[in-house]
Amino acid sequence: MEQNPVVAIAEEGEHALYKSLVLEGERIETVPFSKALSSFSRCAADFILLDSGYQVQKGLHLLKEIKTTCSDIPVIFFTSAGSEEVAINAFRLGARDYFRKPFDPGEVQKRIEGILRYKRAAERKRVPCIAVHDAATLAAAGFSALYKPRNIQHVVRYIQHNLTTELRLSGLAREAHLSKYHFCRIFKQHVGVSPKRFIINLRIEKAKELLVKEEMNVSLAALEAGFNDLSNFIKEFKKYTGITPTAYRSAHRKGTSLPLFPREELQQ
Image 1 (cartoon, rainbow, N blue to C red):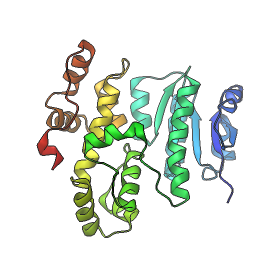
Image 2 (image 1 turned 45 degrees about the horizontal axis):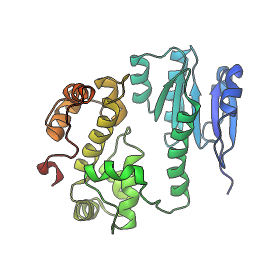
Image 3 (image 1 turned 30 degrees about the vertical axis):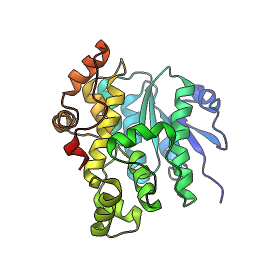
Image 4 (image 1 turned 90 degrees about the vertical axis):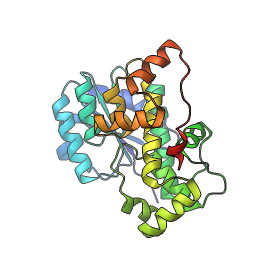
């Protein structure tokens, strides 16, 4: 079965930029931003690059339309007039990532390839091996791939690639082809923590990675890690690490020793 393309929605003057991205095995098509709503069949894509340029509100409106129609298609949002508020709105509407122009093509390519790698593997109905660069994050969150059932490995990968979306127990159980009761029991038996605790742990690990970035503030790190409530994020972060997100970021910048793993009670 032929793959759908990666579709870049942008003003025509920007089409060459997106056509120049090197995505092995992928076809990149472009659609004019001004004609996207009328001329683009939104579900005929495996990935969408949405460049709003300076038309931020129109871009956010289009993002909402796309995610309403085809919520399973990953979208990266690009803008020339970005701000923290724009980034927050884009993530709330379902964007998988956000880039302010000019951006580093290599970084964008890496992000697209990572998401598509998982998507393609899922389409082939096989579970990919846990990537080496993910091992430390997963271990800290309470997971080791060794000797785990394939359906549990699949759910872990599914959680990893959907951290910014609402993850319901019923949906996770469906991914594992189990009832909710049996899924919870088997997940905790093999992972060591409940599905809910694992998701929180993984989101905190993601937030820890984000907080060390110079341009990242606490509220944006919370959203990118999958927390929609800032106060809940701060509470869970402190429970997990023993310090607040602000203190964690400050300690990292000063070179102070930081906790690498969750406290023992959060691994149960």
